[in-house]
Length: 45
Image 1 (cartoon, rainbow, N blue to C red):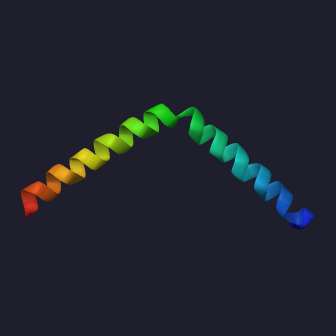
Image 2 (image 1 turned 120 degrees about the vertical axis):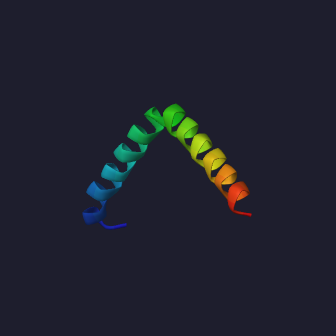
């Protein structure tokens, strides 16, 4: 690992931590999206 990559890794980790703080909302959105997609596929097929 080069020292040049370290800032990018820190940035990535901070982005991940922000995402995990919204994990509940993200999970609910994902569940809604999946159920919507399944319903949509049910209409098509």
